[in-house]
Image (tube, rainbow, N blue to C red; front, top):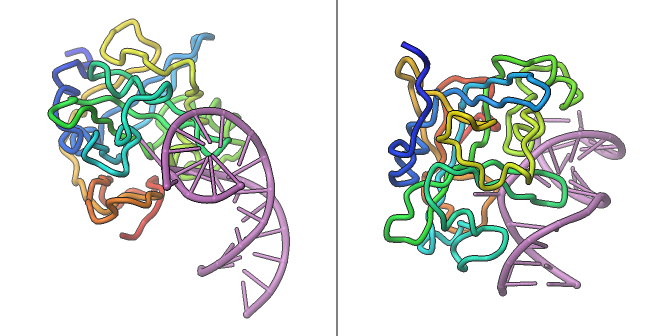
Length: 198
DNA sequence: CACTAGATTTTCT
DNA sequence: GAAAATCTAGTGG
């Protein structure tokens, strides 16, 4: 059985469900020079649409977030704090207008040489233990915004997990609104998550 | 270890 | 102008 690329039916569900199921899947990034990068996703956060005050989609469609209002299974990449990119995957719009899952951290598996060079550190747990770090390690930037992750000729896609994993959940990180919603998901006992407690 | 400032784009509290 | 789904380098205990 060849590895299965996650398709539209996987992403076409509520963001909380997708965020939970994404833990343990493999992120694959193909670079223009042929280099292949792989990482196991260990941390995600779900964001809703117009009903979630912490979501970019809360205040309606803008140039930046328009991808969130499109079909599920596409990448929503945005630039934040003037320095960092964050990778999101669009999920089922549902009844709340739009939804997405923020990929917060991954365990580096393949292409470590490239990642250590991009990140300027050789410490494995520092390569992709945060949304900004992950994008730097995987060379993800604005040009990937809107990319369809479900196409098998895409330069970035996800592969289904081969075994079950223990997922834990907590409150989200770095937000001001709706802090009580426990929509952050991470792999139990993983040293590659962005924060340990909570 | 805890805390702080600063980098700088996008949006609007 | 200020804040934001962040990270790093610096200070001080």
